[in-house]
Image 1 (cartoon, rainbow, N blue to C red):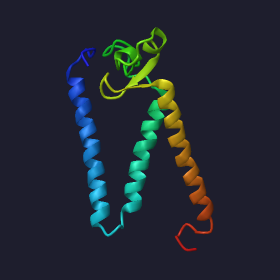
Image 2 (spheres, rainbow, N blue to C red; image 1 turned 120 degrees about the vertical axis):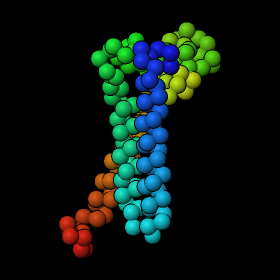
Image 3 (spheres, rainbow, N blue to C red; image 1 turned 45 degrees about the horizontal axis):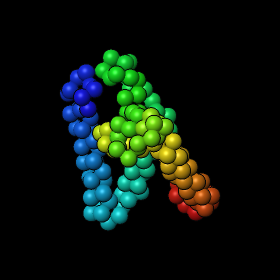
Image 4 (tube, rainbow, N blue to C red; image 1 turned 90 degrees about the vertical axis):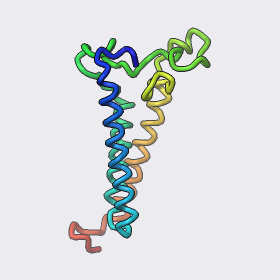
Amino acid sequence: DAELAIPEFGAFFWMRIGIVGFHIVLDVVQSVCGSGRDTVGTAAHIASLVAGFCYFVLALPPMGDGTFFHSMRPYVVECGMTSPMYTALGEATAPCLAFFSRGNGVRVAAAQRAAAATLGGGVLVSAINAWFKRDISDDGMA
């Protein structure tokens, strides 16, 4: 966005997104072409990516020290800036998360509910898996 004090930051951000996407593609190709030997590793990498994204949405950490952006959380904007569908004053001034651009806005509360459900679902699946695999020792023998 034009709010950046350094325009190169936007290019750097998209480069990082491209690198993450490239690694996801490599993991999937390695999993498919490796006769399924690395499927668990691919699932672990994607699960960690999703968990990190959910953490970000839940915690809303500050970005930097305040010198590059107009606020500590420049990704939180008023919903009226994200879409013309927010016409009432209460809706237009509600906080929204702007994903990648201001046009991709989602209300903070809705995004946090979805992130908590996703993260909670992952913890639940992990707990169920640990329960069913509780008899397997560290060397992989049941």
